[in-house]
Length: 151
Image (cartoon, rainbow, N blue to C red; front, side, top):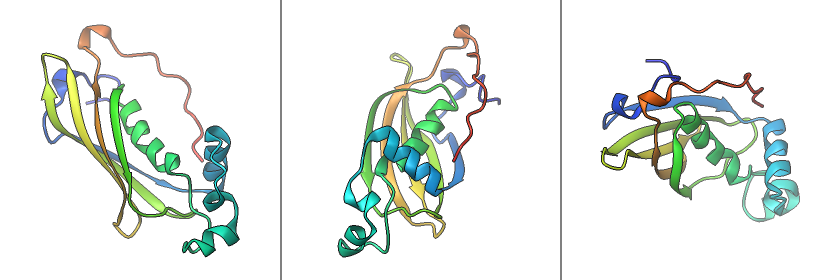
């Protein structure tokens, strides 16, 4: 099953998709620039260490973006997202994002999923509950833009 052709009828409870990304300093800086999150935890090493972290931590939206990347790979249109940020993430961490279908509501064409992001040690750093829509087959596959370089 190709990600361009996944439609509501292709999904079932338990369906899962995942991918892995190494967090780079460039990705962290791009997230800070995009979100405007310049909190001391992300930009002031002394402050981050005084707060109990070993060094700067990434903005939570960097981890959250991994969940949205999963959704984008199947043209998932999110309606609800509820995140829990559990552990800090540092530059150099290898994160694995996984989304699993937990419920399907055919009358509303609604998909409910649970997602997790774990680090290289298998520790959950983020969990998310998501609800949204996946396209109907008759809409056809969307035209994909050129690949985006990931940091």
